[in-house]
Length: 283
Image (cartoon, rainbow, N blue to C red; front, side, top):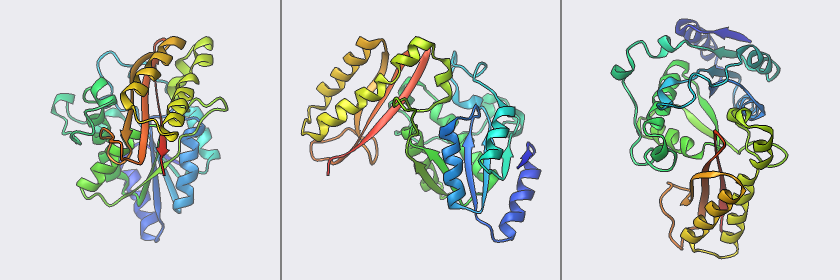
């Protein structure tokens, strides 16, 4: 596996592959790789001849008081795991490479409305930071297809909308959430959980499942279902941020006639903020 941090080296290598007629897939990450990330790499391998992975802890998507400074950085271990997963190139740019200007002067990409709800309401500016860095990485890598996990469902929708609106020549592939055996969605932030918190954490997914069953059996009292889910999470020790039932197509408030829904949740357990979601197809 080739490891580069300079833009010129990245572009030169990708240009060689493309000139040889090879299809390129891209998996952007913030590192501290787990099996969920590696599933994205394996899916990328199925979709293309070459796989590029980036590791970049993006300061633009962290708000004041969030964990940018303490976010786990495990580059040596990540390199070993990517070699095993048969990635072809790892791009590890410095902050100054992607953001050469002061933060307040940085050009930003914003996707309105869909970025302002749910996690966007709790973390103002977060999705502008995500859209900006992903757009820059797409322009640098020039991949044919990029693979993202559905655990960050709202993020995936923001990226899809950005690609569509800006006419970016890259396909976006979503991959189903990868979970531990007890149902907890894999996340780099799971490492922040204490032993007792880790034992409690799967209750977030179990609560999503309970609401999904209620929807599937005909319950359409959306606000009451959301309230009962928040109460259940509080009962077991979470501090809910949100728990909402939305239309899967655009994250709008659902009507009784909508058939494809998604249940989205974010909650704190101790000092750790966990997110998860579950699709419900009522057909």
